[in-house]
Length: 139
Image 1 (cartoon, rainbow, N blue to C red):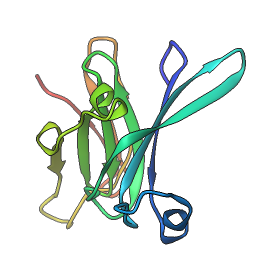
Image 2 (cartoon, rainbow, N blue to C red):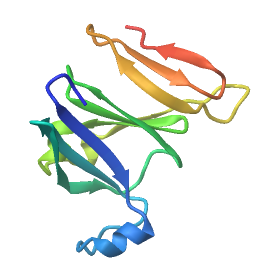
Image 3 (cartoon, one colour):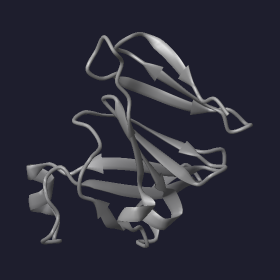
Image 4 (cartoon, helix red, strand yellow):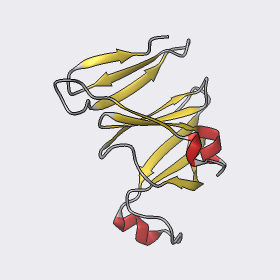
C-alpha cells in the first residue's frame, strides 16, 4: 500500500482457486495481480487481465513497490521479478517487460528473501533470512 491508498496484491493460483475462475488458460502456479485502493475506509480490488505463467522461485515471500519507478518486486526464496505495475494492471504486460534475478551465496544454495523497503531517494534494502543480513542497493 502506498501513501495515496493504492494497493497491490499478488496471488498465486492454486488448483482449488483455478476451479473457481472462468479463464481456461490459467494454471496452478500462475501469478495474478490485484490492484485497487482504499476510499472512505473500504477496499476495492480489481483483478488484472494478465497473469505471469512462471513464478521466479518456489515460495512467495513478499511484494514491494518502488513508486518512483512504477515497479512491483515479487520476492521469493532467493529470486525476484521486477514488473512494471501499471502495465500489468491495465493488461499491457509483455514477457520482455519482466526483469528477474537470482541470488546465491558460496556457502548456501539460495538466500531467502523476507522483505524489501524503499527509501525516498529510491535506494532499496532487502532483508534476508538464510544468511541473516540486510542487502542494500549500490549505485
